[in-house]
Image (cartoon, rainbow, N blue to C red):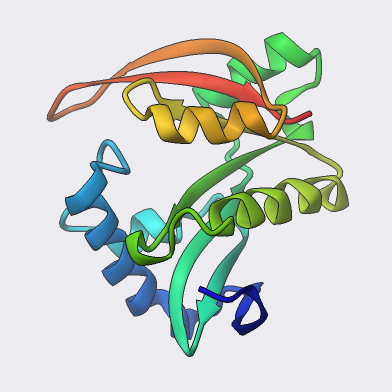
Length: 171
């Protein structure tokens, strides 16, 4: 992948189908996200709490995605609030970061992470995130970018396994 042909731009409704297809591929290959509701992938990618999202486009195709969410209540925001001393309404949840398997190891995930993290202050917020404890490559990315582990969460799902997550705060 050559970076000059890759663009990070704001996601539009026209990108929804391509993002859903990419997320299904990533989930089948990597198990991310740890829980993907098969009947509502579109809702998972565009929840009500989404404030802004971006896609990475390479040669006309969607190869990456990241979003900032501002949910009214969220266990990750609560844990990050305790760690940072900031109220939850001053935090933004960096979420839905994924890249196409064929473009990995070229810095795209890092670029998407930096893009969203840099945008959070424009919303008057600090970026925080949660990541599955079973996803060491994602953990390594966040830590290499200076994110600090702020806690852990164990969230039972209605159906399926427990979600075991690390909570991180941006530098």
